[in-house]
Amino acid sequence: MHYDFVIVGAGFAGSVLAERLASQSDKTVLVIDKRPHIGGNAYDCPNEDGILIHLYGPHIFHTNSPDVFAYLSQFTEWRQYEHRVLASVDGQLLPIPINLDTVNKLYGYNFTSEQLADYFKTVGESIDTIRTSEDVVLSQVGRDLYEKFFRGYTRKQWGVDPSELDKMVTARIPTRTNQDDRYFTDEFQYMPLHGYTKMFEKMVNHPNIHLKLGTDFKAIKDDLSFDELIYTGPVDEYFDFCYGKLPYRSLRFDHQTLDVSDFQPVSVVNYPNDQEYTRITEYKKLTGQEHPKTSLTYEYPQAEGDPYYPIPRPENAALYQRYKDLAEQQQGVHFVGRLGTYRYYNMDQVVAQALTLYKKLIGADSFHDVIKS
Ligand SMILES: Cc1cc2nc3c(=O)[nH]c(=O)nc-3n(C[C@H](O)[C@H](O)[C@H](O)COP(=O)(O)OP(=O)(O)OC[C@H]3O[C@@H](n4cnc5c(N)ncnc54)[C@H](O)[C@@H]3O)c2cc1C
Image (cartoon, rainbow, N blue to C red; front, side, top):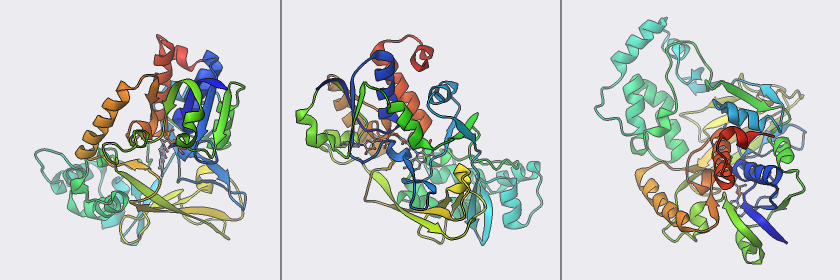
C-alpha cells in the first residue's frame, strides 16, 4: 500500500504527528517502531502483579503550555499529581531541589528564608563566567551542598564530572529559600489517569493509521511506498553514522516488586552518593494505584545501551550541527523528537515540537487551528 506519510517511532513525536495527519488532514500514515509497543520511552504497562509500571523509568507530565495540555486532554483524563523528590544524604531523606528545610535539617540550623538567602551569599563561590554545571551550583549554594547533592549524582548520571558538563544541566534545577518542596512549578502537573499507553492507544486508534511494531525501519525501508517521511529515531543512525556517533547516556532499569504495600515516603528518592543507582521510583505513589504489594525501579546509568540522554557538551552540539545540516538537505524527510533533533526534551516539549511540525506541514496560521479536535 502507498502511504502519504511513513513515521518512524511511536513515541510522543511520532504519535502526535500520526494522530494529527490522520484525523485532521485525512492522510494515510504508517507508524513503524522497532519496539513491540507504542508510547516510546513513556510506555507503561501492568507488571505480572498487575501494578502499573513505567518500563523506561518514571515519567511525570508537567507543562506551562495550555495548548499542549488541551491537545493531550482529548486523549486522556488526568490525575492531579505534584512531584516531590527526596535525596538520601548523610543518613537523612531531604527535599531536593534544595530549600529551607533541606538546609535546616541537614545542618541542624533554624534559618528563616532571609537568613538562608544570606547564607547562600556567604557560601556561594564567586565565579566570573558561569560555564559549567559545577559553576552553576558552586555559585548558588557553595561547595558542601554541591558535593553532597550534585557532584556524585551528576558523575553517576552523566559519566563525567560536572566541571565538564554544560551549565544547562544543573541550571534546570532551582535553589529555593522557602519551603516549596515541589520538584516542578509548572502550571499543569498531572499524570494520565489510566496511564500513558492508554492515552497513546486513543491517539493512534484511527482507520488512516497503520502500525508496524517490532520492526526496524532500516529492515523494510526499501519495500515501502510513501510521499514523506517523519523520522523520530536517532538522526546519526539515519545517516549511517557518517560523521561518527552522537554520544548518549543510557540507563539500566532494575524493576522489582516487594511483598510490602509501602516502601518509601515519596515516589522518587535520589541517591547522590553511596549507591551505584541514582534513584528509586515507587510507582504506586505516582499513579495512586492501591495494591497489597509495591513495585520499584532502580536506575543504573551506563554508557552503552538504548540512547536516552543526549550528552550536552559543546563538541557534541557541533557534531549534531553537521547532521542537522545534512538533515535539512533531505527532500520530504522531517526529523523531530528527542532523538531526531538530539535535544534533551521533556514530553510536553516534544508534543509542542511535533505540533509545530504539523502546523508547518499543513501551512496553518495559528496554533489554535493545529490543536482543535
Ligand atoms: C529515564 C527517563 C525519564 C524521563 N522522565 C521524564 C519526565 O518525568 N517528564 C518528561 O516530560 N519527560 C521525561 N523524559 C523524556 C521523555 O521520555 C521524552 O521527552 C519523550 O519520550 C520523547 O519522545 P520521542 O517521541 O521524541 O522519543 P521516544 O519516546 O524515544 O520515541 C522514539 C521511538 O523511535 C523508535 N525508533 C528509533 N529508531 C527506530 C528505527 N530505526 N526503526 C523503528 N523505530 C525506531 C524507538 O524504539 C522509540 O520508541 C524521560 C526520559 C527518560 C529516558
